[in-house]
Image (cartoon, rainbow, N blue to C red):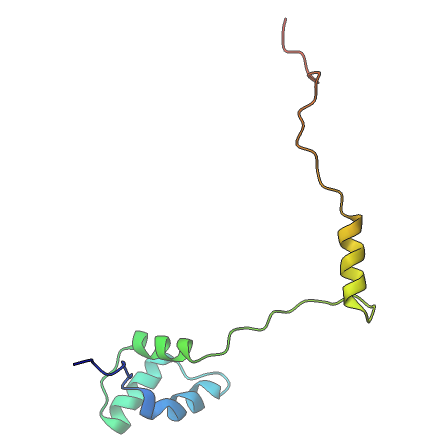
Length: 100
């Protein structure tokens, strides 16, 4: 017999937690744990709340500046063409002489 997938005991309180975290400044995880215990008689650790919120949060957006040109493909192709690979050859003659 297969076991059902894991379901956090915090799922029914998702909106409650989200509303508290959306405030400015956000309500601390310690305070959320206290309120869950007080209002819903739910014992939960601070780390459990943090993990619950982290898993359900959006990843931070990747912020980058685009070139001023509208055609990014041509800009990228130009930069690739301009790139000169570095040589890995060692110089044939030593630059320094350490002999006395």
